[in-house]
Image 1: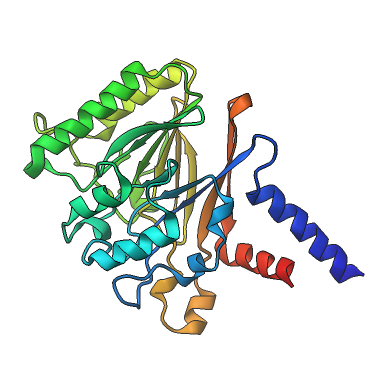
Image 2: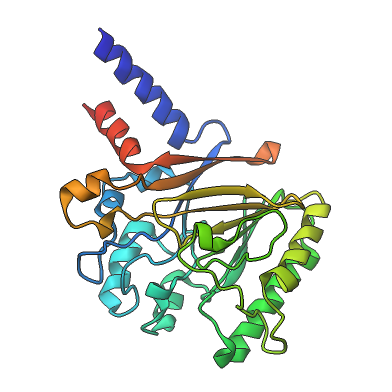
Amino acid sequence: MKKKFLALYLMLHICLLVMPQEDTLSYLFMGHTYEYHYANNKVDPRIEQMDLSVYNGIWLGGDVCSESLMNYSTLLIIDSLFHLKAPNTHWALGNHDTRNGNWIWLEEFTGKKTYYASHYKGISYIVLNTSLTPYDCEQLEDQYRMIVNMCDTIEKSSHLIILMHHGLWEGVPGLPSPVSYAQSNLKYYNFTCKSVESNFVNEIYPRLVKVKEKGIEVICILGDMGAKKIDYLSDDGIHFLGTGLNKSHYKDPEERAASPADFILIFKHVPSKRLLTWEFYDLDKFLEDNKLLEN
């Protein structure tokens, strides 16, 4: 009897977590998802155990595979998992995704540039390619104009979400340095080719504050992390979130089991109420709960 009650409780909990409930949508964010000790075209095997179809959006924080764009066949595998052309599937490219070039393949699979702005159910999105550098001034400047245009013109959205891979937030008022939680700290990353001072805190953050002053919630999400989670609020009321997977770095099963927990981030969205909430979940515990429900 006790076992049946526990199974019922877990079933209700998971249904509330992932299933749409009367205009409630669910979005899943994952970062640093590649399988470290496998071939170049493998994601963390735990992801393959998940039923991703229950989510209304999949947001990827980069480093999806260890060499995501080395082979065209790898993109076929990634697309089969995440359905890259779905309207609310977003992929903020990481260094493991971009370093072999072939970016045009990704544009073919997604129907979008490697950086873009979009809208879905009352939320606006900016997806950044933080691998762009002044060696490609044309695209770097185009990405910057996209950010400026979104921040200047956004009016009706309830939220603005900025997805990125690398840690760019050094110096944001009220936040610790990305050195303390991220696997990258690109404090000198410039968003334009015109100034060496056009980093995030000087050029982008003030624009996000102005968006916040319009009554629109702003959330920045970082994917270049492993076995950590962050949920910070800057002094100006901007949200900064991040998480990623790391257990695949441990080849030995005992070391992997003893390693720190990996987290996924699940958002619940009620468009009619302009409400967006989020919660971190230990991925292994999440999968265990689902298995118990199935049994």
